[in-house]
Amino acid sequence: MKIKQWLGASLGVTLLAVLGFVWLSDTGMKVAPEVSMKLVGGEQLSIDSLRGRPVMVTFWATTCVTCRREVPHLKEIYETYSPQGFEMIAVAMPYDPPAQVWEFMQQKTLPYKVALDIDGTVIEAFGAIRLTPTTFVISGDGRIVYHTLGEFDLARMHSLAKKLLADV
Image 1 (cartoon, helix red, strand yellow):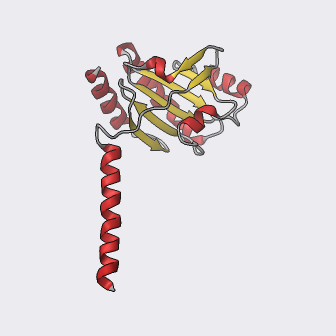
Image 2 (image 1 turned 90 degrees about the vertical axis):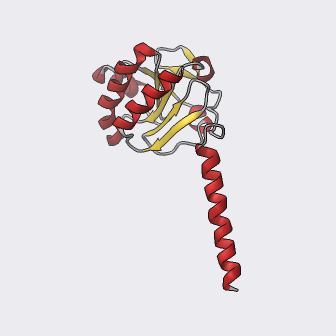
């Protein structure tokens, strides 16, 4: 009986390892959703239209303390790498009132694109995002190469941006 339990546990661990490898390997990474969003200025932007460039998509809220703390890091990444083609979109959560998002953008002088996801289409397309901040980085070929919940590691993001821009 113990052998069966051991074999079952081993099989489970092996399956998880294989799934993890497929998710993390270059050929197995998840492709970014083909979703369109409305930017604060009113224009439409689709993720697909940004193919060929690395893109960071971060989900945030004006009332999220960690999101507010992350703003200087987002600005630093954007100002450092956007001249080389790195794109950034901050997607406000559906519960964030547009006027409050606009006011926050003005106060913090956000240089990157900010989208309003009033109907929740974008958060659903990215996997039913519920907690903020949640950040994705998409390679030029449209694969999600980084995903984190909570504040991202700034040094790692610099390294990733440089690598992705070198690959373009």
